[in-house]
Image (cartoon, rainbow, N blue to C red; front, side, top):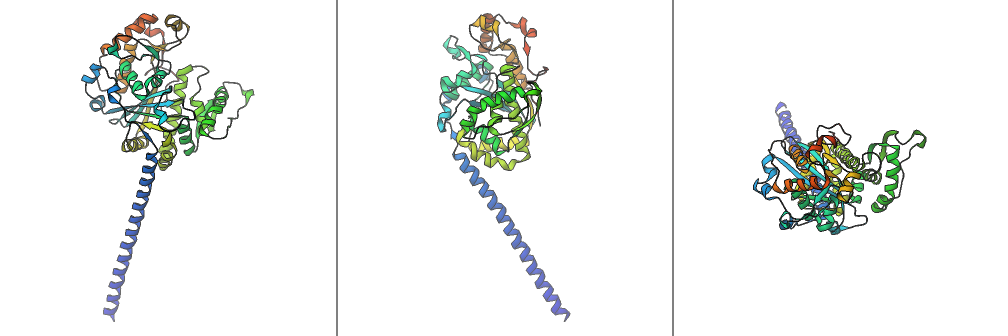
Length: 398
């Protein structure tokens, strides 16, 4: 009798073990199926993206920078140009064509520190658009470079005026940003009543571009323009907030708002990374980039795992207004001086590397100082919004 029970017990254990193994196999298959489904979804979403094959022969890099080999390999830091274009109603590959780039952000991905830092280029920054070898100057506002010759022209402007070696960019329009924010459930942004008024006005255009119903941010006029509180806003209203140029701070404050929106988006993605595939599916038709699918996925992972560091507006030491306009004949922002600013920029982007300005940067710097009257003796007297400065254009977040 005991033998019979023993045999039954062994058979029961074997059957139980088979069931457990079978159950594990089913679970593994379900997990793999889920992974394959997500991969297929992301891959399909990526196919909507406008991948741009850049003409690298048209991207200028100063000779001294070229001789210094690849900056990102030397420092463990990768810098990508993030571009926002005023492309209301623009679809598909037209994103790579002529239009002003009202937002240019140097996105610095520091792999050694696992940190992301940002530098916004003020749209009215006075930069040389001509090739250094052309032996003439053609200074204009930074936002005009994209309109002159697409991403190659914009990257060339950044490289030659700032001694960089950029070859990668991502361009989005209003709709892409607004759609991404809506997938994340909107943003909670601290806004003044005055900012609400301006955001509501901008939203007439942005909501139309996104294809959504126009809405306003409610506010109490009796509390005054300076009254501030956190408001929960949709993608269209958050994008409208990022476009505001009016009020104190002008374009420097505007670039700060843009970085606030990006920081808040990254924080929400960190809280819910499962939204990434849906965001990609929603926005990729309004994105143009030189990056490959794998590179974009890798950047998405960095957004989730890397911390957000400080961010600033460039130029760091600057001047604009009536004196500059009278001297140059145009209403622009000038660095004081270009050489001084580019040194600070490199110290911020590549803190482990030494840097000496190229002949091109030194020459452009002398030209700006000579034309404007703002040379190195004026540095301590002009607006300072760079690293170490006490200014609200600094944005940090984790």
